[in-house]
Image 1 (spheres, rainbow, N blue to C red):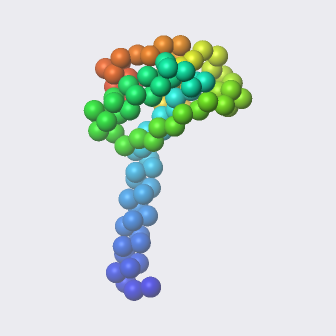
Image 2: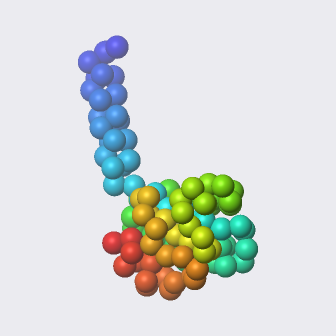
Amino acid sequence: MSFFAAIFSHFAKSLLMELKLTMKQLLILGAGCAQCGKLYEVTEQAAKQLGVTYEISKVTDLKQIMALQVMVMPALVVDGSLKVAGRVPSVEEIKKLLA
């Protein structure tokens, strides 16, 4: 590997590590109902408006949801911490939770 290729590789790895450290992990928990879809939409809007780097996923498997000890849906989990359950908050409220 050439010197420049090695430097580029190191830089790319460092950048990926930094992105993973600053990336918000967002989980939308629910059975796929309309409220779950709405929570997904407003959460994505809030993250985009804040300009944060994020990865958003839907979790519909009840065993996975129960393993997270969530009994009311829809629910929002941010970086492994339950933030909202049983309702769809406003974009502004979610922005406060993500900041």
